[in-house]
Image (cartoon, rainbow, N blue to C red; front, side):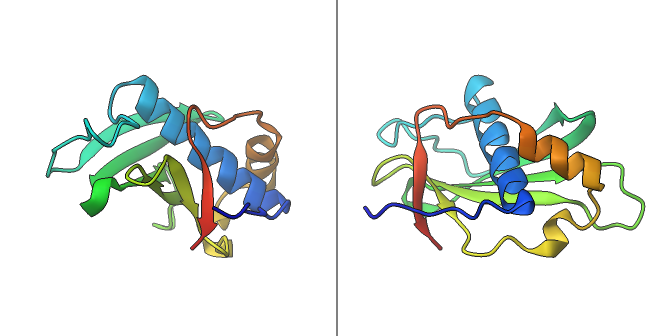
Length: 136
């Protein structure tokens, strides 16, 4: 697998930290496992609440084919109906790694305040037993 070069822009780092934090939280809470052989045979989505940077996030895990899990973290409490979010796919069949989008949409973080983006970008959070895969 080739190395992935992630952007160091504030928005990209904030997105990465949010994605890693919610995946780590789902692992800690036992909502998913990294073990593909014992992969969850669930067909229904799982939702959970996560608090981060003083905001509530709704975490939705959707089990896909081939052991992948789609993790969608949406910030709650925004008036305009656009929720800042991070959506990531966790590959578990051919190793454990996050599929990283090649472009982090400005809309994904449009409703975060500058101070929230800075707070997310300043966090120190590392993947718990998984890595980053090819840019998708």
